[in-house]
Length: 507
Image (cartoon, rainbow, N blue to C red):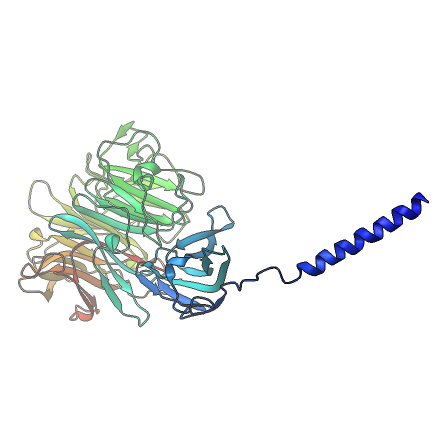
C-alpha cells in the first residue's frame, strides 16, 4: 500500500515539474552579440623598414556599432619573435587602434596579430598577418666623421638599386642609446666570434673617440654600457683608455693598439685583450708601440704581425698566440738592406699584397728632414728595398697610402694627391681639389675580395670649408692605372661630415 502511495506521489510531482518547465519557455531575453564583421586595410603582409616610420590604419566594422566608436574597444598589435634563449615568445608592438611608430624590430619575417577586444562583452577578436621587417641600413660604408671637433658616425648605405644613400648621424637616426663624446679616432668592423658579457654579440662594429671605444649591436645599433671595449679586457685598464687601431688578423682573431700598448685577442682559445703584448721577454722590458700593424691578414699559417717599437726605434714581431713580441734578427750582410733596429721614427706602415705581400714603412731620420722607404716580407723577413724617398715636397706629406697592386707611394698635402714611383724615383701630381682639404686617404682592404673588387681603388676623403659643417664632406674613389697613368675617377659621394676613418659593413 505504501509503495503505491509513493508511486502516485512521484507521478504528481513529475507532472507539476513538467508543467513548470512548459510555462517557463519564452521567459528569457536573448541579446545579439556585437560581432566583428570586417577589418579592412590590414594587408596579409605588412612590410616595414627598420628605423623608419610604419603606419597601418585598419578600417573596423562591428555588427552593432555601424559608426564604430573606438573608445568601446581595446587594441593590441603583437608578433612572435626569438626570446634570446633559443626559443620564441609573444612581443607586444603597440596597444593603439592604428600601428604608427618607428620600427625597432630586427629585420626578418614574423607571424603577427592584430587583436580588438569589445569592452562590453570581453570578447577578443584576433586577425593574423605577416610582419616583414627590412633593414635598409644593412650594408655600406660607415664613416667616423668630425663635425665641429666632435665625433659623429655617418653612413653611405647600399640601396636596392646598387647606389648609396647618405645617412647623417647614424646613431641618432636609428634611435641608438649611444651618444658619442670626444674627437673622432677610428671605426672598424669584423667577425669577433661570440664575445663574453651580457650582450651576446658575435660581430663587432667598433666606434672610437679620444675618450672611449665601444661596439654597438651590428644590426640595430642599439647600445648598452657593457658594450664598452673595457668589458672585453681582463685585468686593469689604463685610465682614459681608447683604441687607436683595431685590426683583424684571421677568423675571430684581432690586434688592438691603445695608449701606446699592443693587445691580442683570439676567440677560439678564449684569449681576450689583457696584458699588453708590447713586451720583449728576453729583455724583460715593455715598449711603446706606434699605431700601425703590419702582416698578412689573409693567412692562418704562421699567423703573425709586425709592430714598431717607438721606445727603441725598431721593428718587432708577434707570432701565433704568444703573450709577448720578439725582436727581428738582421739578415746576413750580403742580403741586408737596412737594420731592423732602424734608429728612426715611423711615420706610416702597412702590409700590402704587392710583390707577394710586403710591409711598406715610411721612416724619418730624427736628426734631419729625410724620409726613407723600407720594405720587407713579414713572414720570411727578407728585405727587398731601402732608400731615401725623394718625392716632391714629401717632408710635408699629411696622409699616406700604398697601391696594393702597383706599389706606388701615395701621399697628400692640403688638397693635392701625389704618386711616387720608388723604382724610377719620379713624382706625379694626380689629384688637385683646389681649396678643398683632404682629411683621409686609403686603399680599403675588403675581407671578401671575391665579392668586393674595389681594393685597388684609391679613396680620397676631403671637405669644403665654405659649405655647412656636417654636410661638407666628400669622398672620391679613383682607379690607379699602371705606368704612372692619370687616375680615373670611379665614384663620388658627398653630404656628410669630415671623414677621419672608414669601414665597410660587408654582407
